[in-house]
Length: 264
Image 1 (tube, rainbow, N blue to C red):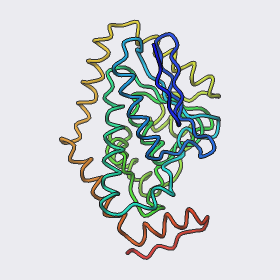
Image 2: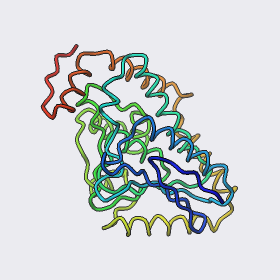
Image 3: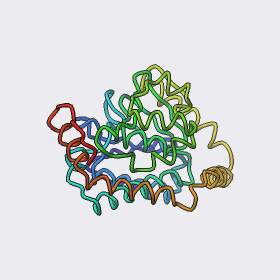
């Protein structure tokens, strides 16, 4: 089997398990357009390769799974390009969620913004003790745009999801486990990877067609109202990209200062 080569991802296959590592440790594995394009290609490779029975997604290093979107790239968005960017991220994460093979996110370190959304799109989440989840987009004058407003309420309930989204506060691993964001919390990344492989071993001893059917049924049961929720999310994301508060939020982040929002 010939593995595709990527600039920002590492792919390894052992015992029919594909380990996908987002490999931008100097940028805390932040998502930019290039990473998203490669994630899409990698998901397609996993889906269409018979020698792969399951996927583990993690981040390079110990500091971050994915510490959000690339803010410099994000800050250049306007209303139209913002909607397009949200829809692109949604499509790719929907493809990951809809893979016919089990997908486990091993969340090491920070999983913020798009990092939490990527973890939510995975079927199961195994976190390390130093994992930190969060959807801080409101601090940039935005909302989660890659499916976060749709998946998090389904996972932990509307009230708890709104609290996290509206406050933008970060959730450490112990609380993430209690809320149901993380299925398991392990001490180290090595422990978390071992647990993910153990779970995959328990799954893949069963009929692949049954696993695929179960995933399809559960994803269908999420009932995102024929994608209407995703469309609304993307349109609001795009609208916010045209506001002064968005420019102030991203500008303050890049300039390492506190934002001053005006409501415009």
